[in-house]
Amino acid sequence: MNSLVRSVSVSPDNLLLVAGCTDNNLYVFDNQNELISTLKGHSGEVINCSFSEDGQKIISTGLDNKIIVWDITGKILALHTNVVEKGFESGLIELACFSPESQLVLYVMNDYYHQNYAVKIWDWNKNEIISKLDFFTTDISSAQFISDNQVLITAQNKAFISDFSNQQNQMLIGHTKLVFDARFDKKNDVIYTVSLDKTIKSWKIFNYSEILNKFKFVDAVSISNSSSIYSVFADNKLDVFSASKNYFSKIPKSSVLAINFSENDNFITTTNIDSSFTLWEKDGKIRTNIKLKNSVLYAEYSEMQNSIIVVTSNSVSFYKPDSTLVNTIDATGINHFDVSFEQNIIAYITGNEMFIKDFNGNVVISETFENIIKLKFFDDGRKLMLSSNEAIYLSDKKFGNFKEIITPKSTLTDISNSGKFIVWADNENNCRLLTNKGEEIYNFKNNNNIVDIQFSSNEKTLITKTVDNFGKTELNLWFISIPDIIEYVNDIKLFGEVYNPDIEELRKISNQEGSSF
Image (cartoon, rainbow, N blue to C red):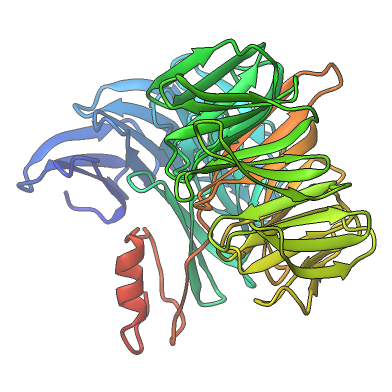
């Protein structure tokens, strides 16, 4: 090989290396630096090459504007020559890569002269373009597959996840300056973005809605505290399952209005339409079923307290799992509430009054607010969120000094258990994720009207429930890990391929004085 190397790629098993060169050829080496094959087919310099995930195929692009799919012996499996189209005559195919299943190829075309920029998805088996993303106004600096129907792209000074519908879809919002690279680490399900704001951010935000969307008409849904077990009441059945296991599927005596998991996910409590509540074991066995005179608004079992808290329109009651009534607190006219088992208190709204009471019924705090429609404890029950359709307020640790955070103009809000993150739904079916300072981090786009939002207890997942014009329900389960931000003393120096270290490695690097990429 007596030519310059323009591109290299290492197979996923680290046993092979392919080099694309200025002599129009590609060369495949084993891990002993032995040449095992020469790939001849380009009539111009090879400018990009990469392996498929199984390590058996190679994709390459050249100055001849050809895209070639090879096997590792040098056999051409597919050839795409109809690449240049009107408006891209002065452009280049700057990169190409396989989808995870290797059936699709993503490639990037930047034509700086005509100011046209596009990502295309090519089914190389059928030799047809199945999608063209051309909504870009600046050059595309990086692109790759996340899954067989989602791509990660850096352009327009931003990074975002897009499907094949020619929309930007999910924006990765958080950098303050140009984002010049984004890479997906499949092993850890993490996206790394690198910016001129001297930060690297890591993101773990993906839509796993296929886990839940087998249900058509959903009345109630809940996610466990571990974020791994789901409970759904749909089509008159109560299903409790994880991604790999079905715990039980039962037809209750009465329709379910709400579902709650216990702290350790060993029990499920359902609130039922016939003014009853039911305590279920995780295998589907009924531990307790009690019918009351008034409608049950809420029921939850605490393993820590060995007690079921039950809220009706005029009272809060505590029951033992054997159905024994322990205590009842007057709460006439209650219209919203939350409970903290850590602090042994309950907060509720009656008209314009907000009460916090201990489990014996003693008033801890009583204050008057206007138009408050929702409240929620966070920070292990030491603070409180209040929300109206005009603003969201967060309290201090004495449940006073409420500070206005944002004005979302929405009645659909939630706060994570730590209080670090807030979510709200806007009028365009967007679910907006914010810090507790009101800074927007992410925008989850839903297809239909959002009717419910809830964080999981460990802040790793978020469920949005939507309803279309025909009453069909869609549940979107989003995996969330808010960015770890690493500041660098020096300017970031990053060229070519990005090494994707894990978070601990990034922290170690950032702790070294004067470190830089």
